[in-house]
Image 1 (cartoon, one colour):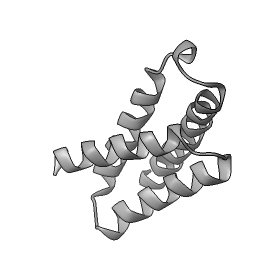
Image 2 (cartoon, helix red, strand yellow):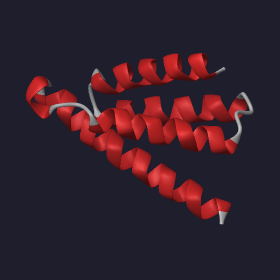
Image 3 (cartoon, helix red, strand yellow):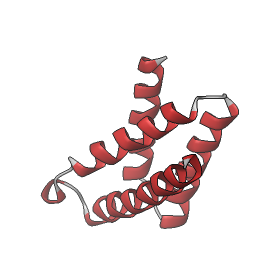
Length: 92
């Protein structure tokens, strides 16, 4: 299961990098999270999945990415941090 989620996370990050707009990027993220929920993935595993994506996105070097890719990385980090905060508030 963990390997499958790692592969899924890698594919999602690649989609984020090559999204042509913020709308497309948001759609990729929403679709991925809905798929996890539809497959009845535990909420704690989804939270960990999000944390790993945030960590992965933070490792990218802006000097080694094109401007669109770097914009996508920054926007995805914002979206994932919002999602993470919303999840943590619903758990309380």
